[in-house]
Each structure stands twice: as structure tokens, then as C-alpha cells.
Image (cartoon, rainbow, N blue to C red):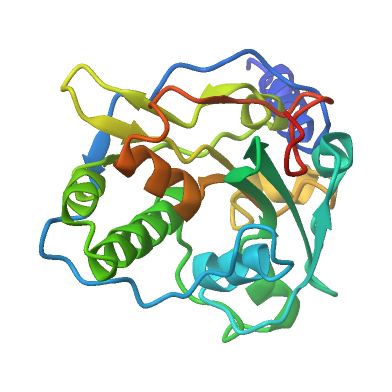
Length: 256
């Protein structure tokens, strides 16, 4: 009988790399996508804080894991510290870094915990259904559209409502999550597409038992900000912004 040990070893090596700080190669945009915000849709129910707020990724944690467990969130001002950070479930520790274009915050990166890991740590009622990074982008885009309408900027609101949110599948390795990628791009359909790259380790999977604890139940996201989406909608920025997690990434205002 052929042994499965070599295959299992390869899988473990790939998943363990999810916790390291090495960066991978750029990845192409997702082929599948979903409509952004329809012209008549309402403003979202979730109020996300400002990108630099220490509560931003805490709010993302609550939203994505459907949890009321309070997190202690750390906001880094250097990318290497973010790359090497590891969220933990109990106490719930999460991590955040903001990428800037000049003085404009364009992306927030969050490292949080999965709903399944929180249930394991705090009990079955501690978290609900798991959501993924594109769901957060939909909420942020709804905020953008609503704010533009309230400011009587109907043309920009219409353009933002037509943005397409790619249904990006989360990666399983940190190397892929940390690779450069376009935060937005103009697709072959002529529409502006939004990327929401992330990482997800399924805590309920059989593989979790053989993984180091620091890898288990991790959920990471790169998220376009309302400020960036607004600039795109108003034509103040062009689609195609490539973001990076390199050491010199601009993670303070005016940093690049």
C-alpha cells in the first residue's frame, strides 16, 4: 500500500508557511467576481471606524466571525512587525497595519481569528457564521456609496455602485497573502474591480490537529478603504494601484 506520509508532509509544510513573514510573487486578479452595490441599495448596517483607528480590525473581527468577544488590537507602523505578527484566541489579540498613498489611507490589513477557533476557545455560542474578506469590502463600498449620495455627489455614487467586488478565495499560505497585488483594476468588462485578498485556515479541518498552534484558525484580510473607494469614484485616483507588504511599504501618512 502506498504511504500518504509524503503528501501529508507537503501539506503541512505549505500550511505552516502561512505563519511566516516571507513574501511571495504577485498574483493575477481573480477571474470570478460579483456585482458591487446596486444603484438602489441601502447603506450598510456595520459602522467601520476610520482606517487608522485601533478599533478597525476589532470591528472586522466581530463582523467576520459574528462574535461579541472583545479583541485587543495592535496597529503597527512598520510592515515587518505586521508580517510576523500572530493573532491568538484567548486572550483575543488581533493585528493591523494601514497602507497609504501619500496622506491617503488606501488599504487596511487585518490579522484576526476564525469563528470556529473562537467557538473552541469560548464555547459554541461565542461566534456565528464565518464571513470572508469580500463581505467586508461590500460593507465598505456600501458606506462609500451612501456617503457620496448624502454629499449630493450623484455621479460619483453611481460610479462607485458599479464597482465589481471580486469573490477572491482566501489563500492558505502566508507567502501568497503577503504577495504584491492590484487593490483595484479595470477588467476586460470595462468595470473597475476591487480585490480583497486574504488567508484562511479552517480550524474545523482535520489538518488543524497536526499544525502548530500559531497557524491554527487564522483569518487575514487586505481591505480597500472608504477613502480609496471614494477617490476611485471621483476620478482622483486611477484603478491599478499595486500594494505591497515589503519592508519599505508606506504604512504611515506621507510614507510613500
